[in-house]
Amino acid sequence: MMPNVDPKKMAEVQKTSSRINAEIRILHADHEIRIKLTPTTPESTAFVEKFLPTFAENMATQLGTFFGIRGEIISVGKK
Picture 1 (cartoon, one colour):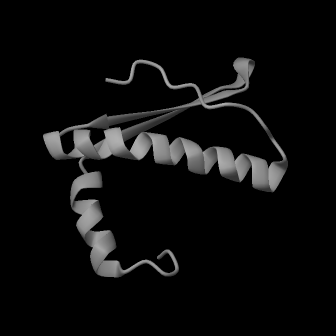
Picture 2 (cartoon, rainbow, N blue to C red; picture 1 turned 180 degrees about the vertical axis):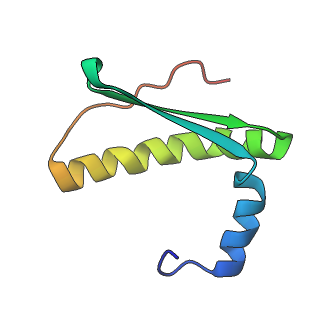
């Protein structure tokens, strides 16, 4: 369990987020990781649309903080 996270709130979020399928692909030749989230309900689709920018920011922050890796976030095809 994550520290400082209310278990009831987490359970509520997981009612929606558990309706998302994930595929994580490692492309070794390109030094690339692709994460594909496939929502299966209208609610999980809305969740993914809100989640992606925050997830990208958090990943960028961790790369910078822990490893000193810098770069940019490129958003493509946002509705």
